[in-house]
Image (cartoon, protein in one colour):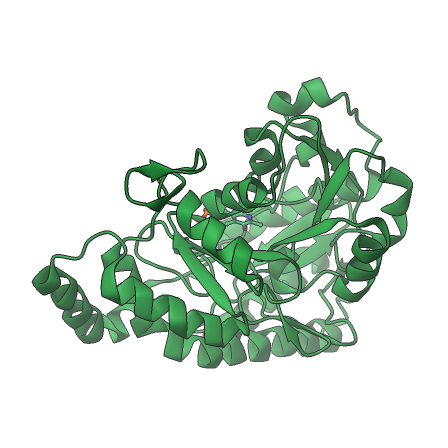
Length: 372
Ligand SMILES: *Cc1c(COP(=O)(O)O)cnc(C)c1O
């Protein structure tokens, strides 16, 4: 049996007629950059994310950079964030000339440990940038309280968290700005690069709208120095086809997670691996289902590969230890929980179309590994 980490074929084949029709509409209109399909998608996504405004852009990475620019974050400013995330979370801060200040993660949900934040706030701190890692929201209630107390901005890196919730509030609708990615492996994946920003602040929204077109509010009148970062018409049209299916896909991912938990416990594997839990008041959308394997993670990964099972490590090197960030002066041991996670996490297949027998095969194979 072959079980890839992610299989896009089934999902995309099922939608092929609708996708082709959507591509045809863009071709008919010759609206390749932004245009009506993107505008319609922005509206539909605003509703989905419970945000007043949405601004499509070229990628999730760009969304994060645009967010920093829109909040006037630049040289001399500090932004508090997590070292246990995808690279773009932190490069967005350095791209605008600001300094990332790392705070370690919580051992359970692997999101920012909110109890460590206040000690890192200085007079230069401008914002906190939490990541809703793997599809579970960070503790936004606590983060909002800290941000309000210290007059800080909140930028949500919601690239992995479309539709996830904290206390009934959707990811991206809670902070000052939310940033999403439509990279094909995200829960709502395009057929190319794409991203979007969400905000409830009209002024921020209009600034973002300008920043994505070189900072021009009116064509050829550049109020700011922005980026060239727009969502293209084909992506907008494709994402409109996919969005109505998203809740169904999320439900399948959540069912798969529940089934994994059941099987791990039935097979008495709970002592050997830690499975992700959904915290009180959060709605996890399982962009990734990441287990933790003490000591033997790499061995297990190799064993599963031999069994035809795809897994991956998110993330093998925490960002405070990346070569390009050496100038920030962090060293091994500074972020113990992040470093521990980098050594013991393993993402298992969780995609919506994953069949029950394939899922069971994954758990059986893990049981076989530990029984050897
Ligand atoms: C995917 C991702 C991004 C970047 O999105 P791209 O569209 O690939 O640029 C940023 N942050 C996190 C946490 C991500 O998972």
